Image (cartoon, rainbow, N blue to C red; front, side, top):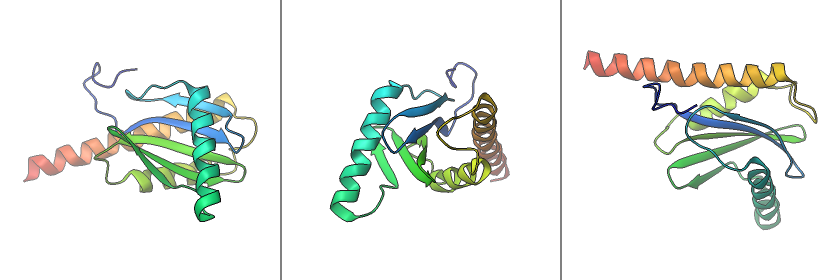
Length: 139
């Protein structure tokens, strides 16, 4: 779904659930960001292993062209949200989404979990857009 075709600019472009081995368990496109989910999962796994080796910590954020990639870990999987580069609330939106789906993320992702993630991510982007629009009209 292309957000521009619908007249909507999504701040969360996509959501991925990737296990520690780099296998993409769920790929949920919301906006314009599209990438091969198998390659993306492997890329994230390699970056995380490198970050662990160099700093001993998981990578939390990454920039890629016009996008911010926010990663958070839940048990044995990573919740990865792709945002517009100018999304100042990207980390907060990722955390809220993780809180919402905590406990449902595991080695098997159900259709219900995918739909829950899609709805929450779309609603978060829509709410932000409505607030921004309201604020611009008030100023």
